Amino acid sequence: MTAGLGERRRARSLSLFLIAGALTVIAAVTLAIESRGLDPNNASGPVLPGLAETIGGAQRISVTSAEATYRIERTQQGWAMRDRDGYPVLSGRLAQLTEGLESLRYLRRMTSDASKHERLGVTDPREGGRGILIQVEDGRGALLVNLILGVETNGLYVRRPGEAQTWAADGELPPLRDVATWMDLQPLNIAAERLARVEIVPAEGRAYILARDGADQPWRIAAPALASLAQSTVTSTAERLTQLQPVDVRTAPAIQGPPRARVRATTFDGVAIDAELIVSDNRTWVKLVARAGAPEQEPAALEINNRSAAWAYALSDSEAEALAAPLSRLVPGAQ
Image 1 (spheres, rainbow, N blue to C red):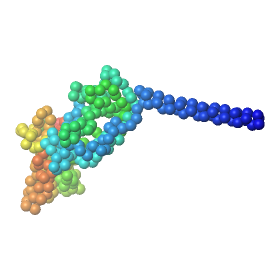
Image 2: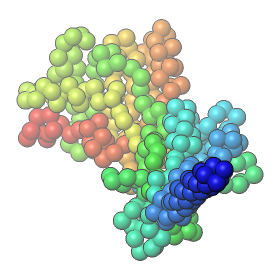
Image 3: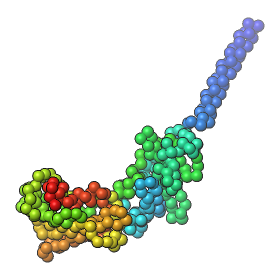
Image 4: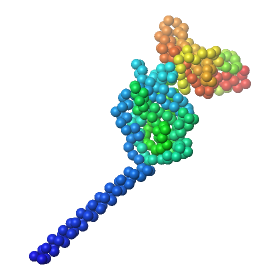
């Protein structure tokens, strides 16, 4: 009986020892988890929690950076670039932005030292900084999103305006510094093969004409009578009007001034497309108008005008130079 009592006591002691050991392990794990949560270098979770539930009420998107500032608003016709006179915005780009903001997640805590914001790219662009400020408002003006993004080669960083703390983040966002990526800025939707004749009056030097006898024939300098030394340059100059890649847009009446250069392209079926290059606000803009040579070409001309005639398109310096290139570019030494 005494032996049995001893066995029971030893068994009870062993059970208590095992329970104590288990509790110690659990406590250690819990402490480690809590310590990890308190570690200032660790972070997790969405940067914009609950955005999926509120983004449907968005009414306005504002983007500010050193490269461009623009405002997108919801209108009765859909989302449009408000400070570009209501030019339509690509729905696919909006979807990219929405998905990117919703999936934006913290990776780790970075610096709260404002003197180090510059190297992470999160300095406020409204104060001359190189960060990207993105703000999304609802119909009442409440901010659903208010972030400064640092898009760097070594990662993505986020900071809230007015706060010093910066975080490394993970997410895929569309290009935000280039306003042109939000719009379909192809003024002409016609194939280069349709062009038969191009008359160019450049800003400097004499006017000249490029022409060809068929879509499968090479371009030549029809006037003045000069030999072309670079066929590829002649071809690219003749077809440049169909390949424009503008960098900005305004309504045509907003851009005024005398044309700096002119281009007239005529298609094989008789539609003439006149382009005027106008310098305004230190940028070169192109305005386009199509005219039918005969009644049967009026639908084709109308299609071009419906797309482009209401707008003026800003060109980069290199694009403007290529569209109305001086004759000396095609034939070195020509005046």
